[in-house]
Image 1 (cartoon, rainbow, N blue to C red):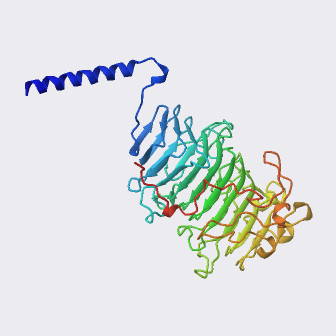
Image 2: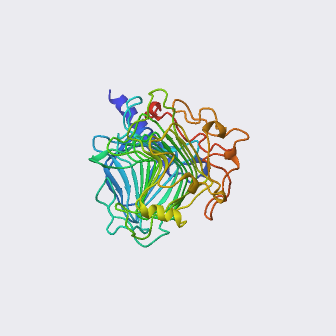
Image 3: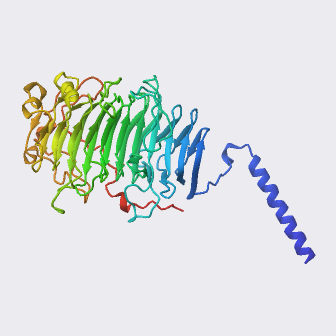
Length: 452
C-alpha cells in the first residue's frame, strides 16, 4: 500500500508540473485551451454599473427591474437569449447616459422572450425593454410609463443610447398597475445618435412600440399580433421611421382601452406644448388578418390611424388595410384637423383599402376629397385591385409580403422627404423581403431551451 501511495504521489507531481509548463509556454503554437461553460442560466437583478457583456453561450433571466446605469454599456452578443421572469415582472431599463449594444445578425438575432415553455407563452408574460435618453420631450419631469420611477429627457437631440439591430421582443407588456403596462419596446427621450434597425415585437400585452418624445430614427420594424396600439407616439417625438409591418389578430385587442394601428398625441390633453409630436413615417403596411374564423373583429378595435390631441405626425407611402370597425384614417379634434389643413400633418402616397364597413366611415374628421387631392398621390382602392401577395395577412403561417408583379404598390408612391431612403413603393415591401431569416412568425412554439 505504501509503494502504491508513493507511485500515485509521483504521478500527481508529474501532472502538476506538466500543467504548469503548459500554462507558461510562450510558443504561439501552444496557446492555452480555455473551456467556457455552455448553457448556464444567469439570473440578473438590480443595477448594472460597469461595462458588461452577455454572451450567446449562456441565457439570462431578468428578475425584477434591471437597470443599466449612466456611464455603463451593456453589450449583448448575436444569438443571445434573454428571458423575463413573469412572477417578478422582469424588465430591462437603459437609463439616460447608459447604452445598450445589442447587435445580432439575420442568422443570429438577439431574442428577448418569455421564460415559459413552448406552448405556454402569452402576451404580458414579462415586462419589456425600455430605452431612456436625454433628447427633448414636451413634458417636464417626465417619468416613464409602466415602470413609473425613472425620469428621462433633456436638451441633447443627438443623444446616443446605443444600438438595437436584428432583435426580437416577444410576449412582453405585463401590467404593473391597472392601465399601466410596459410596452414591448419603449423609447423615452431617445436621441438620434441611437440606431434602431430590424426589430420585431410580437404578442405585446400593451403597445408594440411607443415613443415618448425624443428624436430617434428607426427602420425595419415589425409589430405582430399585439394587444393595444402598434406604433404609439407622444410628447414631442420627432424621428423618422421607415419600413414598418403591422399585422393584427382581429380576435385580440386591448380590453382596458381601444386598439389602433397608429395612435398619436402631442401630449395627454392635446396642448400646444413644444416640441410638438411631428414624427414622420414612410413605407408602413397596416394589415389585419381575415375575420372569417371568428366572424367579427374584437369590439375594442378602433381605427388603423388615430391621430389626435394636436399631434402633427406625417405618413407617407403607407398601405392601410383590414376590417377596422370604426374608421380607416381618423383625424380627431379641431387642433389636429387644423394641423392637417395647414400641412403640418402631411399624408402623401398612401393607399387605403379598408375591408368591411367602418361605423364612422373610411375617413373620420376629414373627407375623402380632402385626403386625395391629385398632388398627394393618395388613393382609395379595393384590396383585390392592389395585387397583394397570397396570404398577405396570414397569421397561421408566414404572411405573403411581396406585392405581385404589376401591383400599383410597387411604383405608386410619392417622393419622400429628406431623411428617408428614396423610393416610390407603397407599403413596407417592394421586391425585397427584409424579414427573411431573422423574424419569427410562430414564437409560441420556438425552442428556447438551453443548449448543452
